[in-house]
Length: 116
Length: 112
Image 1 (spheres, rainbow over the protein chains, first blue to last red):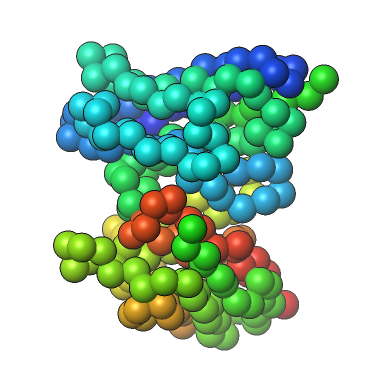
Image 2 (image 1 turned 180 degrees about the horizontal axis):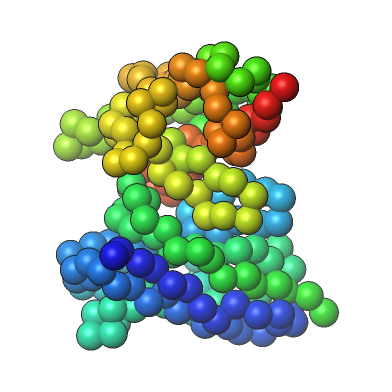
């Protein structure tokens, strides 16, 4: 069945880096844009970034542009989110989803806590 | 950024009664291909959101037909014809027309 499994979330200090992964299965990965969305504790949803099937079309929200980098490895059916210069307000559950604009499928999320 | 505003922010409904959530966007949501990317999601505590409705009024597979949605331009509505206990949680509308795609603040539905 169609599945997205995020990993890589952990407790990290402000200013450090973290790389999240999302492993996809059950569908033709190369056919789809992929997205990262996050949800801070007790808050709403924020779309962070998307990447097209080849990795050449990428967009970021202003809140993460210049600090976060989305990428994908089509050979591994995986999408990544490299998060640099992390801040306390980056604390959230991070979800990968697809397709772009429609977000039909979501992973269970991975939790990132940024705290000193 | 397109601001998406939901109302009400919370709703207490008796089982079997109807419920309605409004979603308004600060800009029209018709994309260049003619589609309107306004989607609705339901989230239970500790769970990822689940999409209910896509492109204004299309119900996802497995979504009960007591859920319906409509709208155009900047005004959209999600309706539950007869609320059931399993419908509690937070409902979000989301626009996927203008980048960055944005969500409403969420509407919390509880049972009276």
